[in-house]
Length: 555
Image (cartoon, rainbow, N blue to C red):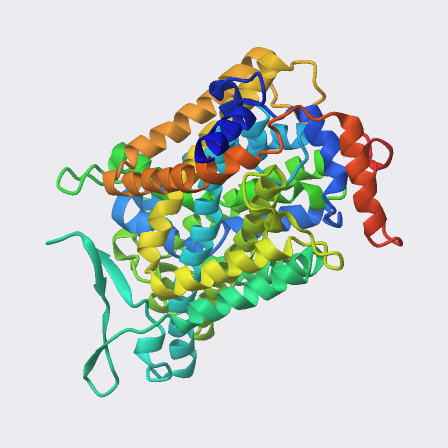
């Protein structure tokens, strides 16, 4: 009987006539993706403005108040402005690749959906599992960091340092490489001077559950909450810029590129490029806009605008903060601990300004976490819709029109990870995974330009076939690969590889490959039947989908 089951599975796997390699690299056609879109049931309410703020909320977190100062002090000096321009250019290459694919394949799933339509199922699985690392582990890292900033903000605002029990606001374990690599307990100092082991990072768990409840309420509620948070964050940044302008000393910009220091390998051109690698990660987050394509009113037009618009706004804000920060203090005197807030204290700004900046960091982290928690369940849902994850994750709640099971699973996992593991360990894992997604998205643009040059593209990378279709995506893939190599931490890369192997050996081969809905070619008529069935079971007063060809405005 066991032998019969194995043979039966192998026969199913081969699809009757497909080889194993055919099965692993089966491509889900973009036409089928387009036909499937109406049956999923998301509520399409996001406007172009919402998508821009979604991208801004995902990009600008506490990094604008921290990374700018640290990179300027340690590596680049005033030339940190050029470092941001270099990193912004690399991200812009990836952003326009995302924008072109989003205009062709307006389906939730981001890089997972794009690679499924170009490189095959096994590559799509790898990038989908990788996106779980980017969004879910990234959200947990932000939750842990938010807890640290929240505790610091409350202490500074109240003038007291004994409000929280240290055992309940710190992760209980930490990763230490020496003498023996592994997890070790975290020891904290109590108010009476005694020492104890940390128990749980309770604020990280609570903010995770709060964000989960907002996302579960619906995309409109999530978007409204995010828009309010982004506006508050903008106000905090503008207060710093406006206040700091009156303290700028032009002499602080000289030398603009400090001379190279061979002992620290900082400053000079080398330091400027090292700083560009460090600040590159401050730009990450714009790709989540493509994960909400099915909830945009006019995705082929608005998603590219959301991606490019949010990246442009954030580049301008990063450069503005860098110019002010390096102008109010000599770069050697910029503090590395909460640099923006403490720089305001050093120059004698009103006492309320640093508190507002710290509040901006807390709010900024909350918005980044909210965006990640919006994106992650939609990755789960899209993969489950294709049969690669358990079917219950594909369910859309009939009232809120959100992937509720996926939202709850994401929120609970985020709460556990954020409350147990330290922020550094979690954050390091996301960077390599994000760059891997950039590489595959860029290659997907290149592949589709050769395979389907005639396909409609509401947004197309400028430069025609050879520049826009070949040079730009290949340059984007190359620069992203170079950043992985330049930042090459073998231990971090090894952890990412282990994560991918866990996904392949623990989920895809035991489950996903046997349950994939793309094992056999699907025909539009069958999909439309399913769509009609879903429509009959949904709210009769609200249609599931708007016909883009009729409703979406022309260019």
